[in-house]
Image 1 (cartoon, helix red, strand yellow):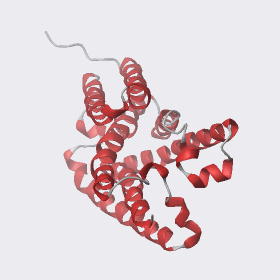
Image 2: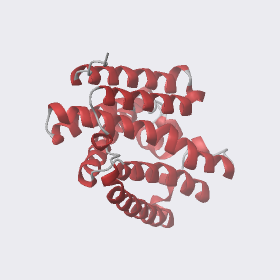
Image 3: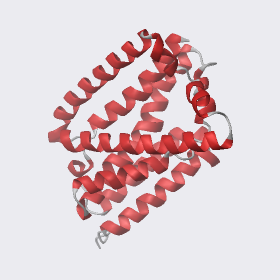
Length: 234
């Protein structure tokens, strides 16, 4: 007996529940298991999309779009690398790369962050979730623009917990907003708004390129290369 197809709205609700649980696991309950959480949660989200009648093309990983996505990915990584190089060379922007989370890390630990932790623990889950499954399901119910906005709002809310100590971890932000509770709240709100806007850009890349590889590449380049540049400048 075939399994009944999951209604789109039910799939959306299930996706949100999975993301809430994954966020709590990563930031409150089991932070050391973030890689496993990312892989399992990503698999569950893809399974929900397929249960709801989705395809690899709808997810953004269709065979026909991989070539175009790879071209976009290469160009985006090159652009971010060039911007970071300019920022690292200019004294006025060099301090932006300072991050206390990486001050005590060795070169091998930085490499693990950039090549494993970021692509698996961050990029895989967030892109599969917000630019893949959520965007695909929302596009069934709304226009692509509305789907991008709704997905990006959820992407911003996803960053509430991980951004709570951002003012302490980023000295530039701490000095700008202060180290009070009010300052921490402002930094967190700013992080949520910034990531929501970034989510819109990533959704646009997903829609424009037809491939999830484009937003994945930009997301990895911003985070992964940021670790590398911060390490080289300290």
